[in-house]
Image (cartoon, rainbow, N blue to C red; front, side, top):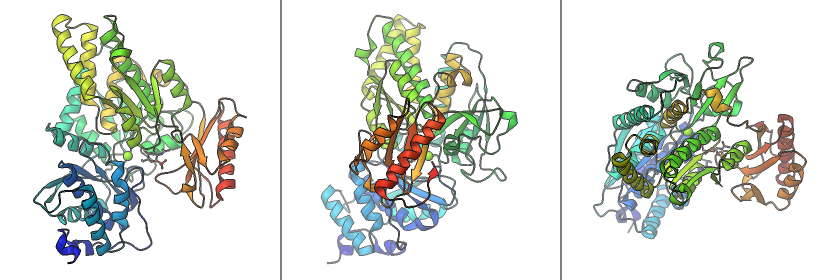
Length: 559
Ligand SMILES: CC(=O)N[C@H]1[C@@H](OP(=O)(O)O)O[C@H](CO)[C@@H](O)[C@@H]1O
Ligand SMILES: [Mg+2]
């Protein structure tokens, strides 16, 4: 009997999406990504993958079409698990095999075997639900059709098109649907606006630098922020680079990745904005950085993910102290608060966080690793330096918080500890618990600045970043570099780490590490030191060492 008869994957569909020649796709740090024009078969197969994941878990999953901060001609696809987080890593090898299967027969064989191994209820009348989202890329329309066909090729699977969304909106919807709570786009907008309002109402009456200019990267984030603005009160937001005709192309000379990596003002920002409070979103609205345009050049004072994390950590710690310490309780015993960073976090931020008495954990690059670590705390805050992050509250802590706030509302209503409990509850509703979200992150930053009565300048001066430099080394095989200790030490090739250490020791406040990128065919080099010249020179030396051990395969560029 052929596989076709054994299994209800409709081979006719598979044949419509032949694999492009000579390309290999890998799930990588953030799903499959490539030039949009060659992604149809990958997206079609990701549709099958999503349907299987939904069948396996008996819950709704998500499929998002986006290539985030990459150029407009790129696209990508990733799967959101039922809890709204990234697809579990154990499924990644199957995902890779599925999208690279050379022909329909191999593909079917792989599915048959995987279904058996994973015990997936398949073809027995079970239903699967997949929410589809896409960003504003022109290739998204055709790829959406490919995803739908992939889903439809699995009997019992239903694709639900949620339209153009930010990545975090789709993750939020998946999480809420499975929790049985309100999950539409207008529910999302209303929740954000309402929680923001409550937090501002609970803040002291500080005068605020109310105007905020936001760079929308000419993508979906700017569009959604315009929508949110209509129901927001208490903030004066001006959105530029909204993607409207004449404003420019997606991510071109704008967006959070550009501002963070180039430390430069985005397009459509200029002299009139000098000294203003500005923020920048990335192409799919899951990264956020702030910046202050400088007077002298196109440079900016960058307020990156590390500083956003610091602001949130200060605020949460203060609220926990009010909530417990007023009554002599030690919150360290009551509640575990932890922050998670990657090796890319500026050393000055880590030192500052530790000095506040916070537990700082290092995780490998990629939000799936940070998220997992943060979820081990009652309250876990994670951010990548590039602006992707969120705050996670454990269910146990949230029910405890609700009970304590209820108790305080009868015994000490209006007290600082009562208000702190209410604030923390509201933060858990405002901030996206599924994944980093630039829109909810932006509203929390604004609410905390309002609470503290801080200008963007005051926030920026919390600590001063150490000068740093990122470089990319093109090598023959980047996977020849194997790292340990959250990517801070090279274990292979042997001898490389010792030489990096010797170099680093020559520089005051020197820190340096190298790791293979999960999204580009390069080895990334990061160096930090007490002056910019020293950081540049340390990074250069490390690139030379990488070349020496791995073989130089092209020109070196800035990150
Ligand atoms: C240094 C850097 O910014 N790395 C980025 C980049 O990963 P790499 O594995 O470094 O290529 O893309 C990831 C996905 O967007 C993001 O999570 C990560 O922070
Ligand atoms: Mg993104």
